[in-house]
Image (cartoon, rainbow, N blue to C red; front, side, top):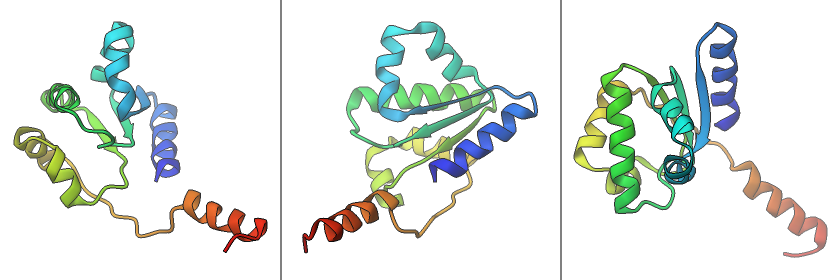
Length: 130
């Protein structure tokens, strides 16, 4: 999923767009420590948020709403990458955030093997674990 999103970002940047990739859980730290970068995240034409929905808290929920609302109001594109199911996402998003995401997003589901998990299984077999 991440590789596909990064490929989209690279193509977008090649065509003179502005874009940025980050992991969702890093945004609170960025907001506090780097105002210029946080402003870029708010205003870049294409934002990729990986690990979307990881470690939800009230603070992150409010921050996410502000981020999505700003991008929604300015018609900016966002790609969300997550391993969570739609039901899990619905549980941690506020109604207002979910409404904005549903209105402006298309959803792609990938039913593939998690390559990191499969590598752990391969390493276990090689090491003799069963």
